[in-house]
Image (tube, rainbow, N blue to C red; front, side, top):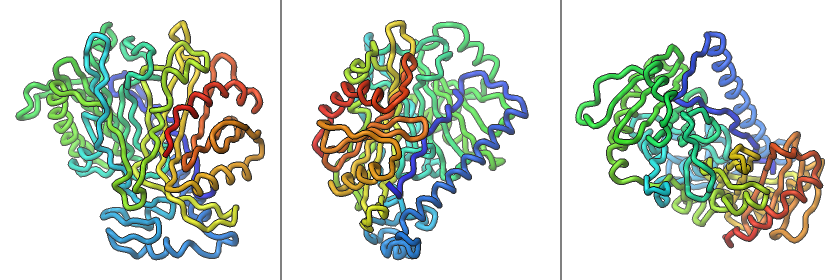
Length: 455
């Protein structure tokens, strides 16, 4: 699929509640890696741009040319212009920069004893960021510059880690990349049942300093992070809930001025959520002029039953969902198809838990929901044409294929206007060939296909 590039968020964001004694050398390496990551994203954007040109690269689409000079509120083909988002910065693969309405709430997840889970993205929402004068990054792909929330949804029956925050694979966390690639905001929630030992208190006393509570919010204890890193950290405590805030504005000397309003918003939200908890955020795209239809949220088909077909005892309690804030545009010039197809993408990641409670494997499931069937058909046709190592599959969905891309195996399934891409890894028996991957995953794929709705 020429106009989409795959970019996986492999960066594990540091927990704001974990000890982080970085040396100056390590800090420089972190900053360098972020700069390199930014260059990689720019390079990917250039690749995407040229993918939207015709075969000899002579011209871009007429719709995109018009969009470059359009005013907010105007529509040109698949492109819808938004105030504050310049088309020349968005490029030709974004249809609507604010295509996702991320205000819906799921049901409240609870422990067996009735304790409600306070979800990280509910204590600081995308709307809250904008109130504080920060602009979330916009991206049509579920990539490293997309919003990501890790939450407990009740669909995975694995144990919730309570080991003093030593576990870094499953965290109640919300990650917001901002419109500058070096900037990010991370929110981390820890509740009393996760702080049973001593390490939490040690980290709190060693890495944080208590400061006066915010005016009008006396029910919230406030701590600041002791650090010489180019970031600002807060820890807020109310009732049975701690919220860590990590604001990294690497080229801004006034991070404190931008972080404090966020901390105040979190404090107010925390007091409210302790009384009236809410479920994790969910996106919808049907309000966008570019995508007046439904999409498939990936985590709805990646849960307990599916993980058991892969031989795991349980699915992990936490699911990690990457939300594309924009609707996207695909084109397939290698198939001699100049049509611009609009889609919405979503990704879910989940661990498989073995009988000894260790992590036995990992699954990433990405859904690309097109406006019409033809876009999905061309998506699979493009993959089939480009893949050097591939194997056809019969009897699953309307079309399916297994491919190998560098060191990853992909299982693609199409059903109507939906394309599902599944990447699985196993700690016990790593996959070594396409045939083995296909046969090992087939029960899981059948479970997913049966769960797919008719979009």
